[in-house]
Image 1: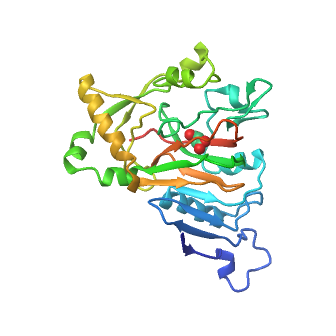
Image 2: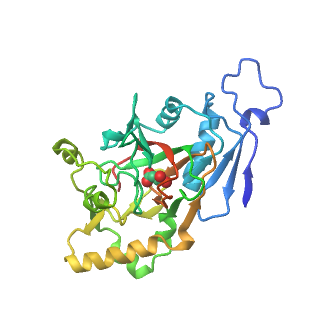
Image 3: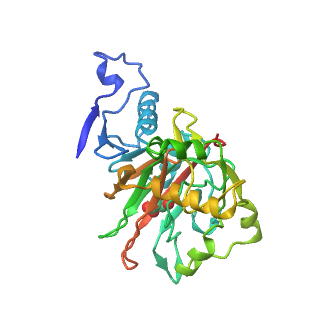
Length: 308
Ligand code: SIN
């Protein structure tokens, strides 16, 4: 179920636009989802140039709803890259094996194996995480475009980490605010390799790109000023300065609290959806689908700030 929240573009609201207007917008709606986060965009065509005012509406919706679902986008990988770049520089994933040929900025997320070789990262998102939180500058946001969807399964879940912070008991808030935690890409890599025969061994160069970093356990969103929990079961290994058992216990509490059902939106993909989420506000998880059903998605990832 959805709630209409906005209609018509700026240009539509003007009675008689002058003939030399070059910022003419498209006629599209942004509707809030009936969920703890998320909005869908209907009637916008991202294969067409996006005016400054339309971009501003999308940017605002991204900050307000944290997930923006653009329905029915028949876009090329180059158009996805161009649109993503409007929000910042793009990040190239360390697993270069799964870049889309000709588009280093596009990570193929897929369970498809062709001629004995996987075409993409088959188990991306198997654990709750925020993209690239193991980098000094984690991702601002990611865009995932549905190219081929399975007949069953394949959902993506998002947890609202602002709500997770707001609803954390005050005593726990006081305990964790100001702490730092280590994030590392390698935290569960061996475990994932055991599950998925296709996860490649990393070269020394790849390992050097993903050295552990310390991140604040509670971060402040650089654009909205809202606080959010910033730990995940995938990449966060320990809280700095605490004995191992205390750190483990605290992290387990935070992980469990973060993904309570009341913080979560489950996205059931429709053909040609392009989903744009805010990694500064959310964790996400891929629910998975049966191996024999093809799922092919293209992901772009935008670089963000150093978390504070
Ligand atoms: C990801 O974690 O980026 C992949 C999410 C998905 O495939 O649903």
